[in-house]
Length: 252
Image (cartoon, rainbow, N blue to C red; front, side, top):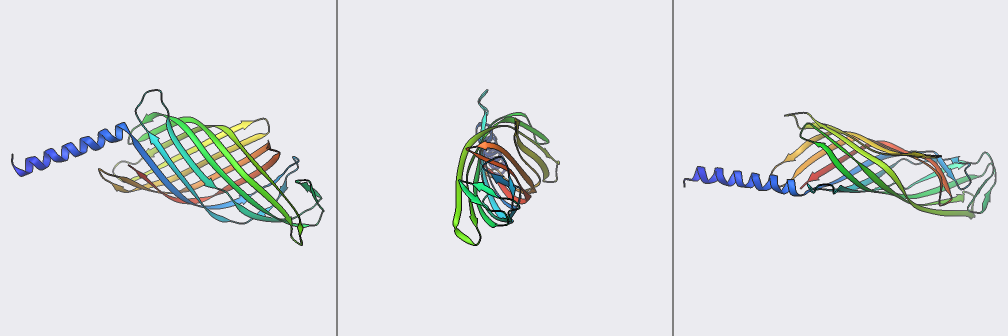
């Protein structure tokens, strides 16, 4: 067998194996740097007090596993840090964690919050031009909010909260043929009684690398997470975290 023919057969075999591996199992991993702006406030008595929060650059990391097994959903895990600091001057007295903070007091707060998404989804439509995913998201919120009078460190209080919030999940992605460019919109949504959570992001993507072993994609987009909680472990919030992000996703 001559060398050109051998090379051609080898290329066909490698392509076939790569395609089969992706059909059997696809792993996606990504990281994003998020220029996060925080607005809103909190309380433990359904009378929220707004704070002026610091802008932060936060990280978000995710991994997704896709497979062709019928009726078994694909899985995605995502973790986002939302911690920040804030300050306000109380226009009226505020009781928090059993501590009374008087009106006209300058108070500082430290918000330590992590959002972890446990997503199970199905690919309802998937090709190089358009893909559509639909599923459910069990969003786990784990946080601690500390409050302290600026001129009296002995006057302070802290409360922690934790819980799962069930949400609807969807993602739509489109590609522009022969350019490497694409775009996606992804989000999770919940609204019932006085609780409302929306977590969505939209981005333009560009393929940096595309070969038999690995694909790499650059992301440039915007993310918004609105969190109106009504008595989650005794905490009430009307936070909004939003801002631009840049990220990289790799596909094995």
